[in-house]
Structure formats: structure tokens, C-alpha cells
Image (tube, one colour):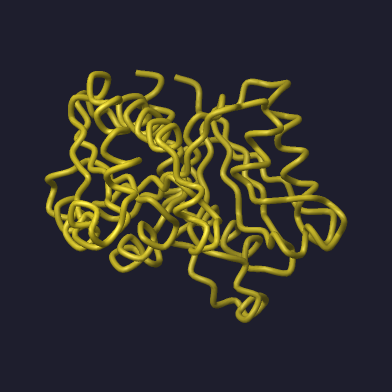
Length: 279
């Protein structure tokens, strides 16, 4: 059986991306998993490496992309509009429906809204976005994780699920109707479940994944249990893409102390997803 081919972009050259990539690939257990094609950044932000990776993915048979972190602010300051890897890869591949799933320890969390200010979450939330997140999560769990009948919990937005509308209307107007619409396609859906309960359920194996309404609602619990080993997965793309769930860490870059565990986990997960998909 031919080895998998995986592209790795090293991210912001001033950050820890090049270091964690090098350390990960020096591990014999990682190195033997696939044939790796590393794209070293030849600009100040690491954006051109991402651009080059997309060109290669479009032209050649590549199994997966693993991306080291970049700094969105630095890329935007260089004159390139950039919301993040997820949004850029979707636009570059003309992918209309995507979702960001974070994996760490026993948790898998998909966020309905991503990098949105907290005060705008309510106005950004729609039934369509919730349904899209659930569909992509259900499909991803089946396709890449071998879970035949996914159990997906949908998180409430407000405390105590809004208490019937007395401390929040979003559950009644948006979340519950969305769950009712998608249930015929995803029978294992459960919710809305209060945010102070749902992650305990998932941690203890009662749910395969959680749909969180906003970024920190989902990432807070996940990083609590897997801060150094979290992996970001983009669902919906025409190829597998994973990334370490950490930033550029300028404060420790160049000191040789960056922990490569998250990069190793991103590589291992990309490999496992490829193998599940090929089965």
C-alpha cells in the first residue's frame, strides 16, 4: 500500500510553526506515518505557503493538508484580506459550506459561529447555520471517524436553555426549530442542552460531538482537557485539513522550547482521517 502524501505549511516564520513542524517530523513514530511535503514560508507572514499548498492540492493527488499557525493581523497588515485558514481555504476551493471542528481528548466540538464578537453572536445565529454545522459534523463523524450513528448534542446559548424564554429567546426562536428540522436526517441529535451540562455528557462518552453556539463556549471546555494536544479540523473541504490548536506564540518563538504535541496530534489525526476515508 502506497504511503499517504501530506503537505505541511510551516506558518508564520516568526512564530513557533517552523519549530514544532521540525520537532514533530524528527519523531520516528510521526515520520513513518506518511510522505511529508513541507512548504517553508518565503514571506514575512507565511501566507504564500498556504497559497502554494492550495495550488498543489488542486493539481496533484495529495491526501491531506496540515497547517501551522499564522497571525491574521500580520497578514491583513501586509495588504492581504485574511479572516483565517478556514475561510481562505473555503474561498480558494469554492466551498460553500464549511465548519470548524476542534478535537481534543474525548471531546469533539463544532462551532456554529467562529471569530465573531460575543455581542454579535445572537444576531449572527440562524437556523440555517445550526443545521449546516450539524450536517457537516454528522457527515464528518461518519466519514472520518467511523461513527455509524453519531450522537450529537446541541448547546444552548443562554443559561438553563433560556428558561422557556424568560432569560433568552434564541432557544425558542432559533435553536429548537433548527433541531426539529434536522432531526429526520440526524436522528441522534440531542438538545438544546445547557452549556453547564453538555460538555460533561460528552466528556463521559454520552455524546460523540457537541455543537457550540460560539467560539469560546466550545473551546474553553476543550482546552481545559486538551490544551497541548487540541486539533482544529475543517469540515466540508474537498481535502482533509487539520491544524494545531494554538497560535504563533511569538513570546517563545526561537527559544527552542515550543511543545510539538499539538502538531503531532494534527498529523496523526490527518493520517487517521485519511485511513478511515479510504476504508
